[in-house]
Image (cartoon, rainbow, N blue to C red; front, side, top):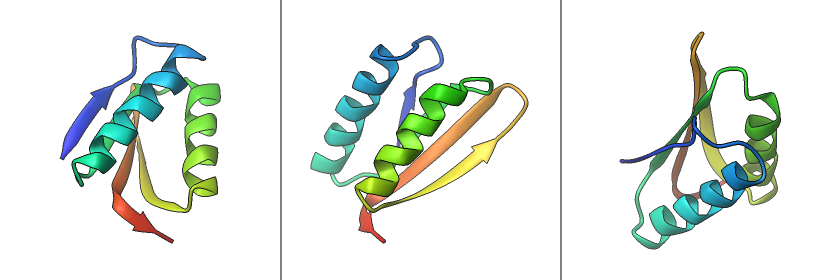
Length: 77
């Protein structure tokens, strides 16, 4: 599983880097976990909305400091 730490970015750069990392993981057919700041509401909602529209399976794990969005390799729902 690949991991992409997006905690140091804010929108719109966060979303651009998310899409680039997602595309790379999909081309390598790997799962990927995106790590965001726990208080980054806008970034996480944009990412979840995009994944939902693309019909990709994902899971969200939340802790006090961070939010982790895990995307399965090319699994469409």
